[in-house]
Length: 102
Image 1 (cartoon, rainbow, N blue to C red):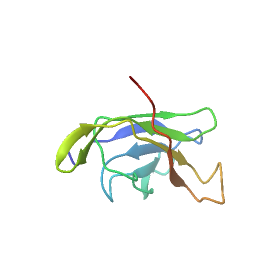
Image 2 (image 1 turned 180 degrees about the vertical axis):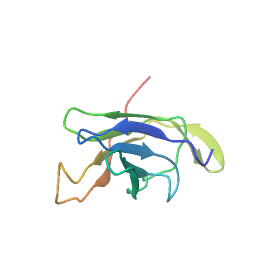
Image 3 (image 1 turned 90 degrees about the vertical axis):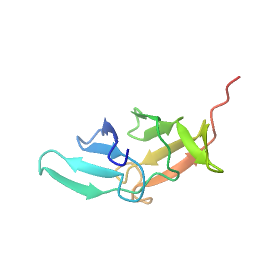
Image 4 (image 1 turned 90 degrees about the horizontal axis):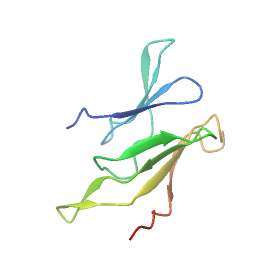
C-alpha cells in the first residue's frame, strides 16, 4: 500500500498527491511535468478522504489509523493551508477539531 495516493487538484492547477509516510505527499505541476515535495500528513492513515475547499485549503478527514498496533477507525481532521493562501505558513498542515458523530 506504499504507493496509494489520494489526489486533488489545487486552485492553482497543481495536483496534490496525498499519501503515507515521509515521501508520500507531493505536488505535481502539469505544465512542467515535475514532482516536488510537500509536507507529510501529520499522522499516517489509510482509507481517508480529501477535498479542496473554496478558499483553496485541502481538508483530509476520516480513515483508519494504527493505534496501539490495532486498526482503529478515526475521525481525525487535518487541513492543509497552501503557501499561496497564507504565505506566512509556507504550506503547512493544521489539526482541526475532530468531527463528532453518534
